[in-house]
Image 1 (cartoon, rainbow, N blue to C red):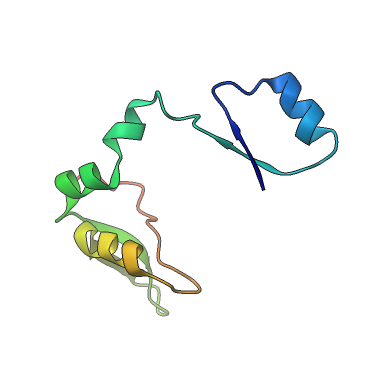
Image 2 (image 1 turned 30 degrees about the horizontal axis):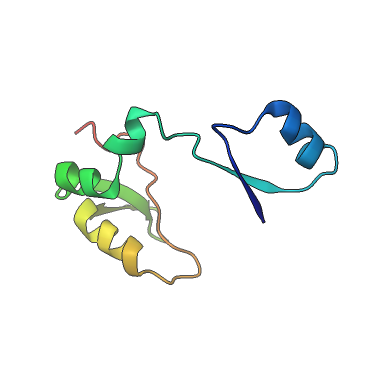
Length: 95
């Protein structure tokens, strides 16, 4: 799939090259200037939230499943699941 640098790619070029012919593309580098790009790195999240618990799903009976971030980070690095866990906790980081 074609990749385009979002910092230099214009709307006109996008429309001509991808939108009109209906060709998918990946637009990169749009978040480079955001504080979150640096502050939300895996290293910073681990440093700040390693022992914090967050919701990562529900059991078949409906109970919420909580996991510490440090274990989730390890899971993300090594997971090959067909249906992986993901963070679904809107209050993560507020506790």
